[in-house]
Image (cartoon, rainbow, N blue to C red):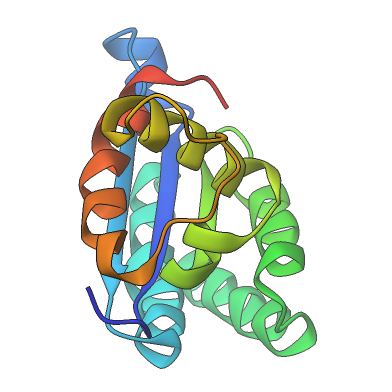
Length: 153
């Protein structure tokens, strides 16, 4: 996995939970920050618009609001807080940021993912907050789907 890779992971809060009584999570891996921000602004906004049954005018307004927030809050964690406020009841972003941060940061989501990763892939003596070395990032990525299905965040 490329060291510049980014991810957008999100949880459906509305339809999946009410209709099929299970959480639906998705994680989109993107080649770099530019592609990740493009995906967020276009594909993710379209997805939210579909979930919220927005018409074309409402979707355009949502896109403008996302653009403004992305300009005002370039830091991923802060941006996610504001975007999640906009999409409450439909979907919630769990992670938007670089793979390197998932492997090394000490915020809640990366710590929880690494604890799961070390439990599944470790030899049993690793501290669950231990960063994952770059050569093993592919295994961290592989563990994401199971982590998203099993843990409550």
